[in-house]
Length: 328
Ligand code: XMP
Image (cartoon, rainbow, N blue to C red; front, side, top):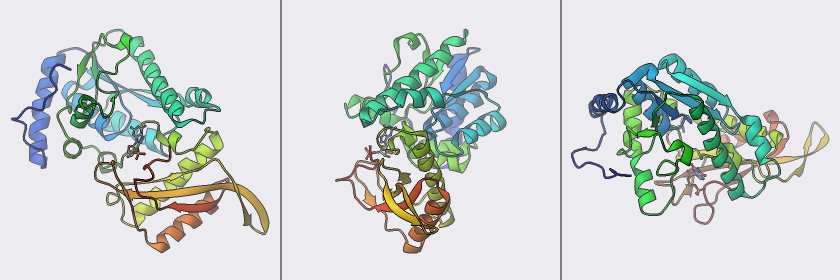
C-alpha cells in the first residue's frame, strides 16, 4: 500500500461537527478520484463496510453498486436490515446474493474450525468476484479498510483481507478507501453523522465467518437455526434490560452434543445453548459480565421453550485467557 500513514493534519474525530467536516472532505476526494467512474463494494453490513458504502453513496450516488452476499451465517434480521437501509434510505444499487446453499453445502461435514474459516473466506471472495466480473464497466472497488487493519497487517499481527488480500482477477480495480485512516470509534461517529441507524453503527463485533463459528463442529441446518434463534432471544433480552451498547459482546453458541431433559412429562434428548457475555477493550483479553440472575433465568426460559431442539442453557463464565471470546 503506497500511502498508509495517517496524516498528522487529521485530528481525532469525536464530534458530529468534526464528522461532518470529514464527510465533506471525503465526498470531494471520492468525486475527484472516481469522476464518472463506477464503484463496486462488498457490503457485509458490518460497521466499516456500511460507513464506507454510505460515504461513497453520498459522493457518487447511483455510480456505486453494493454486493451483499448472504452466506446463511448472519444473525436473524440482518440481511433484511442491510437491504432496507441501503435501498430505501440511501437508494443505492444493491445486488443481493443469497448463497446460503452454496456455503452450507461446502461446509457439510467439516468440523475443524480453521478449515471452516478458510472455506467461508474463500467462497465469500469467489462469489463477490463472480458478481464483480459480471459488471463490465466498473473500474473501482470500495473497501471499508480502517486504520487498525493497516497497522495490524504491517506489524504482522493479522493478515487482513482488506490489506493486500485481493485475488489476482480483482487486482485491475483501483481501490477507494474513504475510512482507511480512521479508528473504530471515529468510524462510528462518521456513520452516525451520515444518518446510518444506531443499531448498525453501534453494532457489537461480529466475526466474518458469522454464526458458523458458533455452531460448533460440523454445521447442520437445524443446529444453525438454534444458534440464530437463541442469539435473537439473547439480544432482545439484553436490549430490554438496557444492556445494548453497554456490554462489549454477547451471543450464544450451540455445541454438537446432546443431553437428557424432560418436557411435559416426556424425556427429551437435545442440545444445550451456551450464553456468553464479555467485556473487553480491544478483544485481546476479556472479562465475563456478571449478569443479573433474573435476566439469566428469563433468557433460559425463553430459549428452552422457544428454540426447537434445545433443552438446556449453560453460561460460559470463562475470561480470556484462558478461553477465547468465540468458541472456535
Ligand atoms: P477471539 O475468539 O479470538 O475473538 O477471542 C476476538 C474477537 O475477534 C472476533 N473474531 C473474528 N472476527 N473473523 C472476524 O472478522 C474471524 O474469523 C473472527 N474470529 C473471532 C471475535 O468475535 C472477537 O470479537
